[in-house]
Length: 475
Image (spheres, one colour):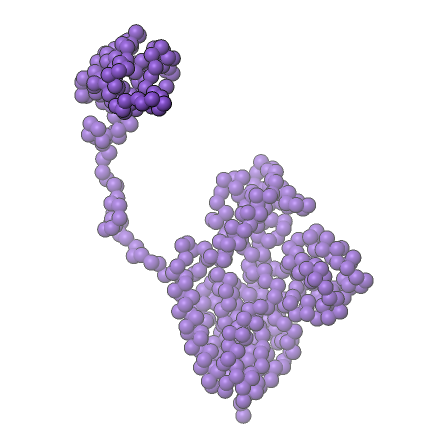
């Protein structure tokens, strides 16, 4: 006589014990094939908040004896102990609560908020009531829950009394523990698994179990390949939540107490954030393990990166993509490391200093410079400068790069853009860059710190000033 068939693969055990969230969902579904019965399933969430079936069993009927048998085997395989720091979420299955109390007395037992809403909404229908119910279920601190319940009282007589008939400690985030780092209020993972194996549930027991095994084998391989595509050790789902909270943190106003605590104003509520103890009065930080908007605002004030404060959202045992290099080993591709190479000036090749700090790059006092021939059209020659700069000899028609007379003390002085040698035509005006005689540019004047502006438009830096770069721009 067939009584039950239990399956728990070794890969599933290792995955749960290595780093999955300590929140297990339990559910049962009917078999639709020739062999009638029920399938009991236990699943959890991995580091990316995705479904991971841990164990399943085929039984003849769902009652307290079959659930006790299933929970007992699950407790031995996953080493759950007495249920300390463990969370179980389930629907209102027959006999399941008794089995959990007997075998896991210290476990936190949550009820699926979706099933509670389905029962409660049979009498209280309406979109506004539905939204208010889910706001109550997702309230993380007391003031928020009280405001939502006060609003619900205006939606019907005795509506709150019917809602509180279901113990809110089982379905509201306000009363959840922090140990599991999982703040889910529904059992949707069970519905996902039941729909995932819907075709297999119409077949015989052996065929169904074989199809489930093949599906799980493929899924493990796909999840392993997906893990290798991560750009960091933090899961993509955690990064998405962090980005959303970062956007919300822009609307927060903070006050610092000159230590490690902050008072954060977010909407109508004030919260207290303690960075050292890693707590926030909104409780969202401790429930999920990802920084809430209030904590992110405080970390940004301290110039700290919130990504370094994410816990329980990393993939344990993730294989590395690259081989660890030995000490002193360099990469064979890409840029070659410059470790051990002495720096040198790119102009004069002096060792020990770069081009900016090279002593030969600065001009020596008394050095004369000569300029190249002018590139201006012959029709508009430039007049000689009336104020020569001390220590420098500048050609009156210089508009190009000034070439130093002494190579070791060269300083590059750039002149304005050369005027193209194109004759002016009627109606086209003067060529771009040309300087009209008698204009302001023709007068010699001092500009900036010891810079001489000549008639040619060139700006020449005094050799006594430590600034070595000349800025050349047409007036």
